Length: 211
Length: 211
DNA sequence: CGCAGAGTTGAGATAACTCAATGTCGGTGG
DNA sequence: CCACCGACATTGAGTTATCTCAACTCTGCG
Image (cartoon, rainbow over all chains, first blue to last red; front, side, top):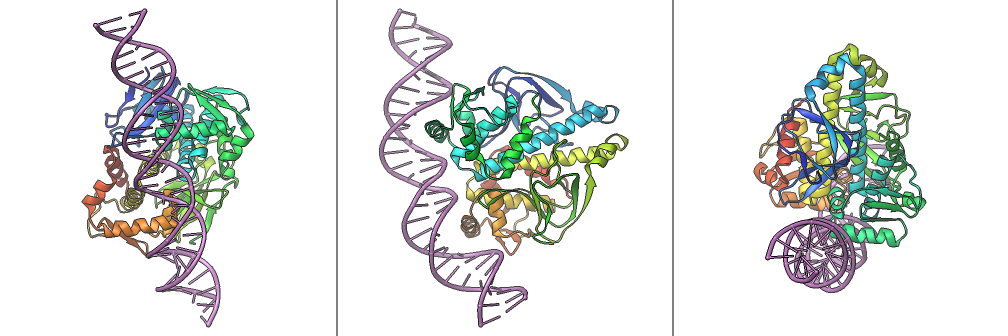
């Protein structure tokens, strides 16, 4: 259910999860009441992984929409590691893919200004969920986020996200409202977000695994 | 050798690396000539991993000090995955540990102001390289960085890093110069950086693997 | 000697933040 | 049925953290 916590920080951790449908946000809560969303989890991706030996979850997973997922014991993973090559291989793939997403988020938050930062986040989610890249101008993608979540994920304030979205629309890049992203001009959007060959290569590689 | 690139973005990727000694920075280069340092690699950690199927490295690794490392073919990893449980398990451990570091970096860059951001980066590196946590007041830790690298890693400008370091010293948190971090007051430092139970738990868990 | 890389400091510009008010919509209780 | 309330979105005005530009020092090195 939307708003539900699938697991909480500091809960004893013996399981990891594979999302089957819906959207999940994984975040770290801070003392001042704010939070940093570390990643949005899309169907087919794993979450809740902790370093081997860690006893607690280091962050919290919140269901953004209605979700279904399956929980796997870490035990099983270790047991299957050898018996079932396919399973371990797939697990490693998913970890590596998550890692790539995290690296891009780091560059996004560390280097981009608000305009391209918000644009990149929305693009990335659209690419990951649709498998399209480049995104197609005029097309709409369903991203069930509210502005608060964009703020928590980008490190900006909600108010600034609001102004930024207004600007992205008025300058003809994209339109986002009511959980729907409409691409106004895919080529311009690409240029806005282009900060090195890395950005495009990354999006290209994210599209490949359309689960 | 300092300044050498161990691998470059977009180089064909068939190997990953295990650092034996020295310090390595992994970064993404941007169009405007700046870069985002994604991670500092310490001895015992792996770098150069790409998602299975990717043909290129998605970032660049630069030796900061004299380094020694060994290169492993990805092939070997896949081949050993089943034959040699220990190897695959260790590989997964390292991936998971890297993931934890990345998550903390994301929160660091997304949520902290310059003062605590720089402080956290230095603390994290000291904890990871020494295995001490909490750090001990009055003790010095060797971190062969220049201000430029701190800037590239935190998403700040060199000039602001400089002012921030001055402030950290004058306010009695820490002193950093000539590649040496001196902890002035470990407890205050901890409080400065404390943005949720997460921060301490994370540092605690990073210390555990002193290679 | 002179030059390059690193660090430092000052002054002014600007992106993003804070505080405060207001609008819209859907749900809920009287 | 209407009034109220809470979540979300929007807008304005003033503040502040960080950036930019520019000058200057120090050190090591060819």
